[in-house]
Length: 150
Ligand code: BCL
Ligand code: PID
Ligand code: PID
Image 1 (spheres, rainbow, N blue to C red):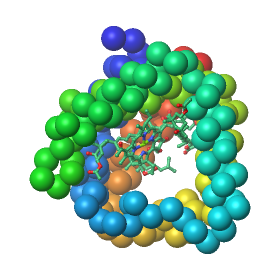
Image 2: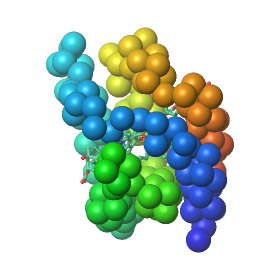
Image 3: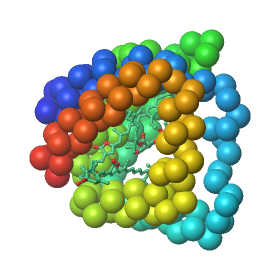
Image 4: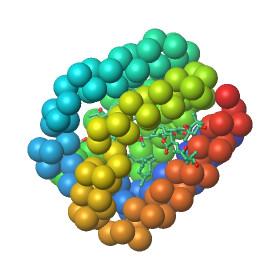
């Protein structure tokens, strides 16, 4: 286990309460933002460019971690803490395998039309705010470890 694996364990423990409060059966999570389809297209392109730049072994590990996580969801669609941890570790390695600019390009492209004023507050209103804040704090600590491994 490397530093990202260790950090993923901490991140997952601290954000699992938040993950469990999300209603994964809500149809809203299967809906693409349609306000500005051409901005959505550009954001998807940034994800494609980022994906194509990833270390193939890290990407494959991420795919398999998700597949195993899906195999162990409970009746509400929530996977186990162990699978969630493996998923976070895999994504951490995927992100560490590309230059930060590629990750930031995705973030900035999505920020244009969604994250800020609509999605954030809406998501927050559906969960326990304290758990969401704890998860976000843990995410910020995790990203420092990922950044140091880039
Ligand atoms: Mg994915 C991210 C669902 C398959 C690679 N993925 C996300 C999330 C969302 C999701 C939960 C994007 C919305 C978001 O930020 O919510 N993925 C999802 C599902 C499947 C899936 C349901 C599925 O298989 C059915 N993902 C895959 C494929 C992977 C993959 C197969 C590649 C092999 N996925 C990635 C990558 C990313 C995602 C790379 C992201 O960067 C993105 C993400 O999570 O960004 C933060 C909020 C996120 C969560 C509820 C998940 C827990 C997040 C962290 C660890 C703790 C919470 C922090 C805080 C409160 C919220 C973040 C705020 C922003 C950073 C501003
Ligand atoms: C801010 C202000 C500072 C403090 C700060 C700060 C925050 C920055 C942040 C943040 C950045 C950030 C980035 C995030 C990025 C998420 C990226 C997700 C990418 C998803 C992909 C999906 C895919 C695939 C996949 C591979 C396929 C292609 C696809 C192939 C070859 C603002 C806190 C530092 C969250 C790539 C993986 C399956 C598309 O900077 O003061 O908070 O979050 O299918 O490719 O198969
Ligand atoms: C930052 C600043 C730059 C440097 C940088 C940087 C870092 C960015 C980072 C990072 C982004 C990032 C993202 C992570 C995302 C993790 C997401 C995990 C998702 C797990 C899920 C699990 C599950 C399931 C599943 C499907 C079920 C639901 C669940 C249904 C319908 C900030 C380093 C570039 C870690 C979704 C899969 C079974 C819950 O950019 O300067 O470091 O990490 O059961 O679906 O039931």
